[in-house]
Amino acid sequence: MSVLKNKNIILGVCGGIAAYKSAELVRLLIKQGAQVQVVMTNSATEYVTPLTFQALSGKEVRTALFDLGAEAGMGHIELARWADLILIAPATANTMAKIALGMADDLLTTLCLASNAPLLIAPAMNQQMWRNEATQSNVEILKQRNSVSFCGPAEGIQACGDSGPGRMEEPDGLLKSVIDEFDVQAEKKCLKGKKVLITAGPTIEDIDPVRYMSNRSSGKMGYAIAQAALNLGADVFLISGPTALEAPEGAKVFMVRSARQMYDAVFEVIDSIDIFIATAAVADYRPVEKVGQKIKKNTDKLNIELVKNPDILTAVAALPQKPISIGFAAETNDVESYAKSKLERKNLDMIVANKVSETEGFEGDNNALQLLWRVQNNKEISSKKLPYATKKELAKQLMNEIVLLFIKELKS
Ligand code: PMT
Image (cartoon, rainbow, N blue to C red; front, side, top):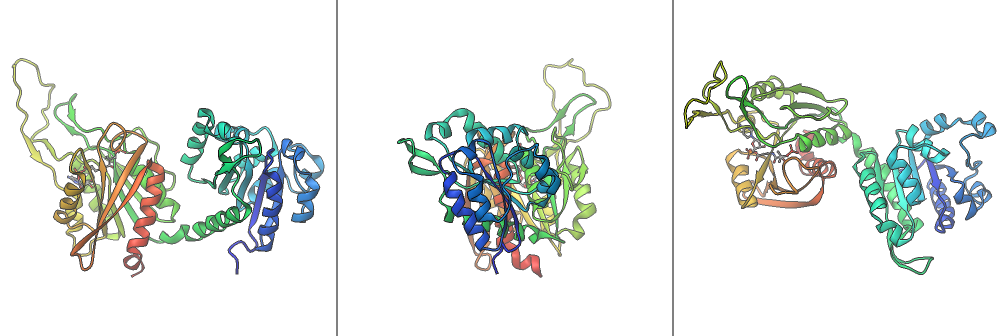
């Protein structure tokens, strides 16, 4: 049976020459058993008549936000709730810009704002409009959203005679993306009932009442992983050092300050945890004592004696009933070899290496990861690179890899 059987799909059609291909798409979706409600923008009706889509979908095509007749049947909020997926094909630069900004000045953009269904966008436009900085920055904004994905555009000769990126994907390719989208949704709950613990952000080690030692971790990588684990249906525990980030909705969040507080918070819950992912940049050392009063600058040199902090990840991975234990390694040089030695030394199931540079690692929104894990009775190390992307995108990919690699352990 097709995964699309009885699925409710809103097909948004915007004004572009590719709109004629969407008629074939409606036919393919219906053939798979989906219910398709076509919503056209005003300019789309200049290219294809609503009657064409109505005949193919068997449903009255919606074109206006303020249509008393249509609203009396299924109001726009009801329609937004009805949808299992909103597919916009073709999506123009204008409609994408409006969705990126959260505007709702016609029925289609209003539905996008009012629905919590995933949104699949198939752009189609002139290659220069696609390449335009404004369009690209809107695409980036949309890609950051967990519920939004893109199909295309493809490259080739365009109706206007130009050649380049901007052609709408063919109906067959779009159908495949819709099926993939529902497959992903079905898998989405693959961590249902599993508990995932993530440490994130920096720790702070106080020197005196006004000074401390810390590092540049923003928490972005760890918080993105927490969100990705929530999206897979996991119960998520996030133990975080101080950050400026908003906690992902649905996670159980414990805010801590120092490495020792993080250690205690982890060991409060660790017994029930299935997967432990240590993204926190934990301070390796702390001052032997926190001075009670502000240190005065009456000497030329000041020595602060430091003592090692407990290693949270090593302690977790040494537990007799240890969870799947995944560490991170941020290195400025020899990234892979340092990461490998951490994998061995800390007895981990996987280490995720990232390079520290101006554009990767700490603080920024983007990163690139290399995953290393043991195979063949722990004798060899396998590895996979996740190329430069937003931390949110990488978090999704990382969680998917973790599920694929450790599915057996997670089922037992
Ligand atoms: O927060 P962002 O700005 O998004 O930046 C993300 C990041 C760069 C901090 C993150 O991607 C990262 O790489 N975190 C690990 C930083 C690091 O190099 O840690 P480490 O080499 O000191 O430790 C290795 C592993 O042991 C880490 O998983 C760490 O969480 C863990 N550890 C380390 C020391 C300690 N006392 N306890 C630990 O659990």
